[in-house]
Length: 299
Image (cartoon, rainbow, N blue to C red; front, side, top):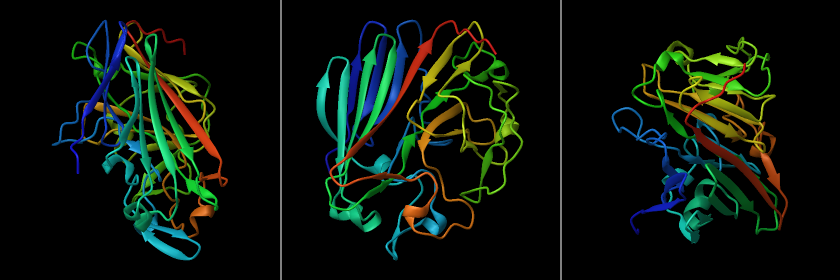
């Protein structure tokens, strides 16, 4: 297999580096400061910002069931381990493609064409997932982003002062990842109005998952200091995670779909959050990331 390579795109305001392995964003550097992406310490967590496809999280018993047949597939799917093809590139944009093969069909019995595109628009990175169904049967898919940001965003910042501020109030309960499955019961929200005060103890029992989220944008950082603005208009679900024990990153994860609910053993078509794409049709999901030198937070 050809070795992966890093494709660099950028302008005067922002530079991004993307690996052809999984079309994974590996660096995002604004002109005013250092890299805001976690630099993948193998001793802690060996990823930067993996893309999740064709599932998000884990399936019950790592098994996908389609039309009565069972297919073994590990958590988050195979995209992050796959070498993509660079299909387009300019100074400030690049697109990467993955299509089905005999190997992918052993895990995921569908034909697909996935294109992940990155474009720098001013001081913002826009990432788009485009899924085309070239087959004569419905394509069932989940996908999402898993970008890990430095926490703290710079070594001069107070880690405990970092906040998430959602665009809207988020009073509904959240779900937790328990034994690799999504809890059936909801837990009280840790969000006070629109503000989530970040603390390592939040993650002692696993990731936080919103299967119903009012907001389509949020900010992460310290008021008046460095931060991240993220938008995710097309994604109905959201996860927030760090590795318990004080890992120095925070993952902000827009998803279409999520891990299997605890006890779910049904067909993939019946799994909550699955997107269905008709034969010959396509669908897109986009998110954006904007590093900000002086973050304005108005909770």
